[in-house]
Image (cartoon, rainbow, N blue to C red; front, side, top):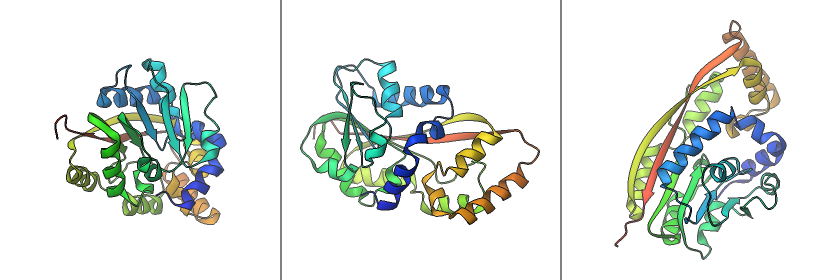
Length: 251
């Protein structure tokens, strides 16, 4: 279940979330192409986006493939879901992922992007999603790797490594449930103006940054300014882990 601090965080940044996380239209398109690829998405699929936020990726999925059914977009933040345009073929549902997984319903494709670290009851979630999926259905889990190369301050990187679940632990849990699991990692080179990235950090674009108070964040930004004082552009790689969990056709 997602905890209240994360709900407060996303309530605070809902109005600027898309600008904070978009990096660039090409980044969104690239990542969405990979989601479609790993889900083996077809127009007849019934798709669920758990932890959808403002629906950034679901919107782009509909730009790339015409699904016959609306995408079910699940998120505990009403403020985030309000950013989904009405009549957009996205069906917003205000609920956390575990509660949703306990509700009756059958789907054949489900994805969860960069939200698994909020969920404490991971094994329960995976067990429930197994029940929700049709035989041959796919659950795609996307998360960042155990270490990242983002141009953040040292304490932020340390906190990230302390809190980020390791993908191998998640693979083990999914296999324990009965899924057939595949793993891949994709890399996308990013190039952002330093001022833009510093503004993202100042606005706490990553949840872990909300754990630093204003004084601590200001100190972190000062450390970053000293480190990158000769850079007008920041170049780094965004690496994403794709875990594809397939429910066997014959059980």
